[in-house]
Structures are given as C-alpha cells and as structure tokens.
Image (cartoon, rainbow, N blue to C red; front, top):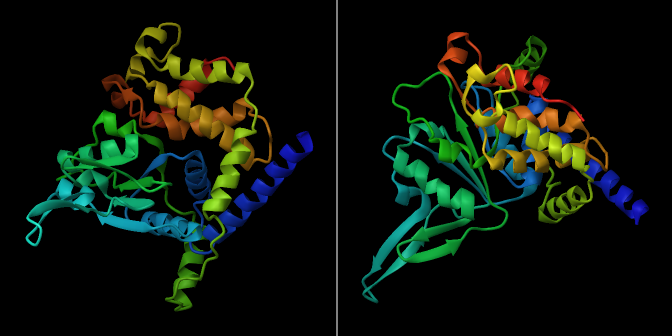
Length: 327
C-alpha cells in the first residue's frame, strides 16, 4: 500500500514537471506564478490574477487551457456588459410560441474573465452562483456547468478610473489571488531575442494535463498526509487575522476584517497540493506558509493605519505568519 502511494506521488511529480515545461515554452519567466496556477487547477479553485498590462496574463491562462485540452472562452469585461452576455438568456421561438434558454459563454471549462473589475456589479454578481455552486440559473431553469469549471480572472491594478471594485463576497470565492510582477532584465532580454528572431508563430504545445491526468493528480493529493498539528496551525493563522483573536498579537491595528473559513479550507487544500509538487507525501509548515500569501492577500481588509504606513497585504501577512507559533 505504501509503495503504491509513493509510486503515485512520483508519477504525479513527473506529470507536474512536464506541465511546467510545456508552459515555459510560451511564457518566459514567471515560474512562481505558473506553478501557482497549476496548484490552483489541481486544487479545483478559481484564481484572480493581478498585474500591469503586458505581462502575458492572458497568454498564461490561454496556454494553461491549451495543455489541458479543455473548452476555453475569453470574455473581455467592459462597462456595457450585461449579465445575459455571460450566463445566457431566454429566447422566444416563434415556431413553438415558447421561450427557450440560450446558454452563454460561461458554459465552458475555462473562463478567462479579462479585466473583471471593468464590469458593473450586476455582471460581477452573475459569476457568484457559477463560482460557488457550479450552476447557472436562466429564467426558471437551473443548469449545471461542465466539469471541471475554472474562472481565471485578471485585473489591472494601476487604472482604477471607470472600474468597479470587486465586492468582498466575490473576492472570497477566489481560492487564490496571484500577483504577476515585471520580468527580470535577463528574462526581458530573452523576450527581446525571441521577438528579434521574427518567429510570430507560437510554439506548439502537447496536451499533457488532460482530464485523466488531472484526475490522477487529484487522487494523489488525497494521499498526502496532514498531521493534526498542521491542521491546528492552519486554523491558528486564519483565526489570528480576525478581530476577536488578534488581541494577543502586535498587528491588530493593521487589519479591519480577517479571513473567512474559506481561507482555512483553501490553505488545507493548497498545502497538500504544494507538498505533492515537492514530491512529498506529507505536509510541512513550510507548505502552509508558502501558499498563505496567495490565499490571504485578497481576504484580509487592511486598516487605514496600514495604508498610512504604506503597507500592503503581503507585508501584513508576513507579520501575521511570524507571530503565529510554528508546530
């Protein structure tokens, strides 16, 4: 039994490495973001990707969908977008005299919601049922969404004029929030050399992470052991972010509202996935700390004092992690 479990972990590790290599054929640099995207897909969560224009956010998501061979739809969110443009609507059929549902583009495996913060609140809220319940209601009919179903949304942090901030309820539906940074000078030089070669055609990709492979990875994740002390550590981190539990820590003044129980669930799932990505069959505190930033940065609401001191969410999370005792 133990030998079979170890074999499954090693096979999963090889599959993960192959998937990273395929993603790297089109995306130069951004290794941490690409690995986090893969972790989120294996964990079965929705992902919010933030970064300035030109960092290949859309290309990264499109490439991920391509190596999985899943149905992919890209939606450009704009201020004039309507909920029906996303989920579908009822259409009158003159031949029968009846209204029939016409499904919208959300009925896909991969939904890329490009610049999600440009759409009005009604459109953003239309995603809530889909992201939380994996179903959509059109008229009086409820339809299940395809399995698997992922929403990968992007937003631009520097242009806030004419945008609509995502409500906390919708932010909490995203398992992770990833931040894409600028490439290093070496990586940017590599990009220039690729452009200079005048190869306009994107390199072909292999479909290495199909549904069968994804199922195999998720089965392997379930074999990763989580000690009870690690579970307590996860809950301690999330509890420390909440008002009633922050009195014993020194960062009380930096957080107005803490993370919800969804954060604990996400930490638990992603820590197991991260352990698998490292080729281990058990979770270490380092796994929890490694995924904590992606899980918490969009779930804690910073206070005015934190903003006055020019602290961002990652700064506060770093203090939080240092304050909670490691098992």
